[in-house]
Length: 218
Length: 205
Image 1: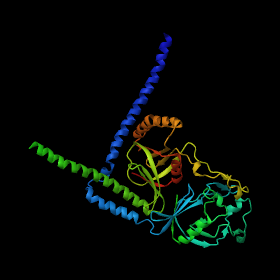
Image 2: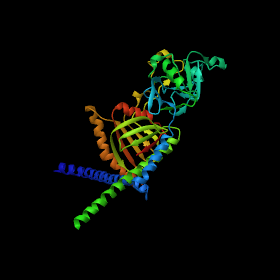
Image 3: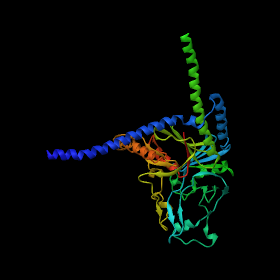
Image 4: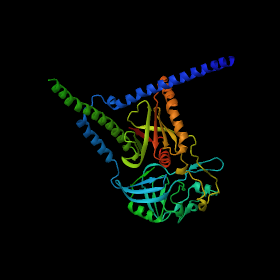
């Protein structure tokens, strides 16, 4: 009998807790339902006094036109860094699709706790700032640190030929679209942030792009 | 007389209702277009989450860069105004980790073995937090017996955690919106995580 009593006594606070919990959950549901009914009216509430159909449609069409006018008229480049694909496009048409290599996302820290580099390909909107034939690579500090070598004082010691392929397209802050010796790594994220492209694709890109060509990277 | 009056009422009431509805549609579309114009004028990428048409678009300067088809949407909490909002945080149980390069160990020929941060390393279930208490919970469609656990967890969350959160935020007089988005597959979900960077602006429509 006493066992039964103690069981009932233990159940009471548990039941009370469950009741509170359920009440709160029901209250939450009711608030959510009320909010979702507000959502249906949000656009109307935000624009009191707006007239109907025929009057707002031309306005929307005008807005649409203004958005379209912001898109590039000429060729542009789109790069998908997740899938390592580059698209050369004009309007909605894809002119060329190339397999590329983008940034590895790795981190390099200077021994002794100095500088730190994150090898990401930048995302956003850029444009072609330079076009170079037979480019030389001016090795930055991180390239020497990565190799465990001392950073040279003489600028001549930084120059490396035949490393970036036949062409390079610069898009700012030391980032380039260039060739590669490691074509088997195309399609993988292995670079220090630059975009590596195969020889034939690079030639096509170089010929098609001009200074100012828009680049969108995501 | 009465049937005539009824038919007159019907003739007048139906178009008025249609006009009112389309006006509301036009207004919300106008808000979307105005917000997009604001974002398209700026250099940078932006997202449009079209919950009605179930698609997520990544755009820049009005150009569509990539699109994700949304399988399922569940909406919870306060309504979201149609205006640009920025991503403040990406939250996940196991965030992807960057590899550290040890100076002197670099060898281009060994790059095949080198670990890099790639699409496969991205999480497929995560929460995107936006300014104004808006949370976007993204996950791929659960398939097979392995989906039992995440599905149960999701249902439990929907019926316990979210109601409690709604009450909590309501008492605190803070906005709270949770939107659950189910994408077609794991890879799509990972690609969306990759594309969203902190500070990216977004319009929820």
